[in-house]
Image (cartoon, rainbow, N blue to C red; front, side, top):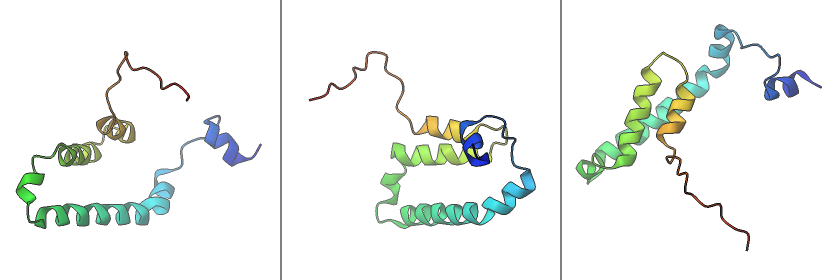
Length: 97
């Protein structure tokens, strides 16, 4: 079993040192932040920008940005929860046709 196989399974892999993670992911994070900034700028410059302010999707994006700013950890999971549908215990599994 290769090291990559073990790390994907979550076995004995240890976290990457912070400096190495920063070196590895800095440019990718920068690019994604610039993309998001551009998207928000385009929304803000839109002809009906005021109506977008009331859109719950934009509210979720802003809520996710607040989570990114929070340093308490678990950010990916918390952001996933923002964009997820609440669990419905009465949901019925689709049946095959």
